[in-house]
Picture 1 (spheres, helix red, strand yellow):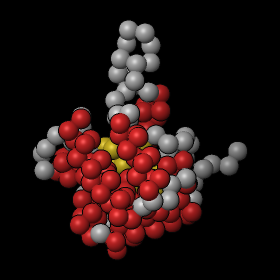
Picture 2: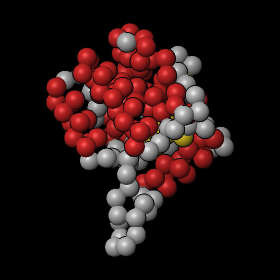
Picture 3: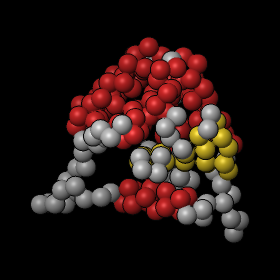
Length: 176
């Protein structure tokens, strides 16, 4: 069995890691899109040290603000338009800014600020459908973990555990 090789590239001081050059290129194009279309939106993104695409999975993602690492799954990268992916980086950059400035970076208030910033960017540079989809996801409160078993709430999803393990591998220098 051939071992998966993980590819790393840099863009504007941010290390990008993915399973192939195509995913790296999509991320770079989205970052460049934000950088050239709205510099004020790009500034908080630069608080990120790394953007990583876990080789498996669909659309889950997690930000590790202390480490400055954003980890997502391939569906997020491969199925998003350049403007939507850029807006997602704007969203995560907002959380990084909240963390760096020692403000609340998770919970309802933090998500509302990040959503509003993402929406503002997307309203200018995305499609009406993308804005409507973002609004529907916000209304559904994507950041609140749903009850997974009767009587239990806020159970960590299995995919969250996988993203945490993947980030730990990266932090420990074990992604090659």
